[in-house]
Length: 481
Ligand SMILES: [Zn+2]
Image 1 (cartoon, rainbow, N blue to C red):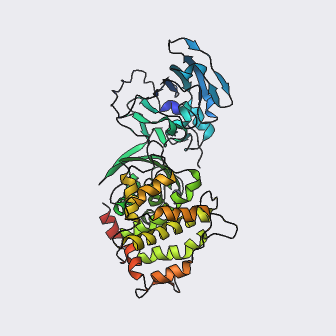
Image 2: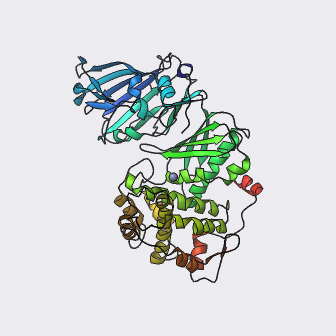
Image 3: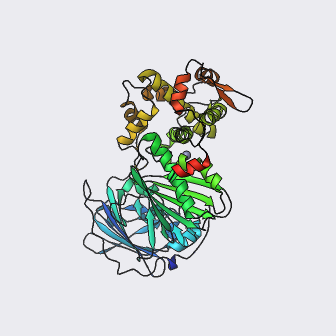
């Protein structure tokens, strides 16, 4: 996680007179909280919270409370009410019922202190900070929705992964706020990537890449097209993707974060060559995460395993890598996911190998069992598409049961549910050598070779799609436009 500092004051110039935006009607009951966050001439945010109750204990990202000033509470009649700060939690008895809380937060100073774009940081002329850091919110999983209006001068950009029914007007569940999507203010180079079935708000901050921002846009678009091509649709109507351009010539760490929207935070060196962007797997991996609802942390292996399994598949199906590349990676790397004698089931595993590659083995087994049980015209794609069509994407949190049920709904008989039950709770040995031999994947001098005379070679060919040579980079560049 990168850390840096800067001046929000230059970003959030006086905008007290910014026009109020009309609210767009949304389905469901009235929100339990309406937030208004206004940038001030000194670089702070002034926040007003109008809550209907249940705000008697509220918090920011721990540590941010040190940068809060002028906090005032008023009860339902507008009378001043007391509050107490204990640790990083504000106790506000008056807000067990309707109340108003006003405060100012020095977001630039918070960014200097945290120096982490996942919490708050300055990147070039932008301040990265999700609303979790600067919006007082009830902790835990409170019921009800909130709405947020962000008011900034016209020359100050704001991009957020939160659902945005109209410009700078956001709406999601209060339970999303303790881990809300990434957001940033200020000097952001914005591009909209229209896909066949969704769009990406791309926000680039920091240095200018040697290849230009066009190269960043092309990289993100290609990864999104990989996933859209596999699923037949982009997993969500809109995602915000933030790319921080820093020093160096490589693609860095990236993370996806949902809960009330969809966002990805990625890092790229300014000197990253075109070849590295063409060959990258990281952005496709993160975009696969958008296609899966947030599950409890003990099922992390399902999310990481799926991203690990689908990323090469989605790239191979677009001809970016070959079928041999995919099977070679799986042949050599899936062994890292097999259980050791001390391992239990996949649920709750904290092992890297079990999480990523154990999860990927699980999804390969799911692929094979679905094809075996439901016939050659069905695949894991039908299961995942069924989840996405049922609204299962990174913006929502689901139980594992809801997820496997939504998947199995696409199949003539349940496959994922029983497979999950087997692998979640105890270690299941998997004979990968026998499995790959059956599929016709054999070790060769330089990697693997694919054997079309193997008993299940047709299944192998169906999984990776047409087995053809990788398109030349020129062809790829053309087809990506
Ligand atoms: Zn991941």
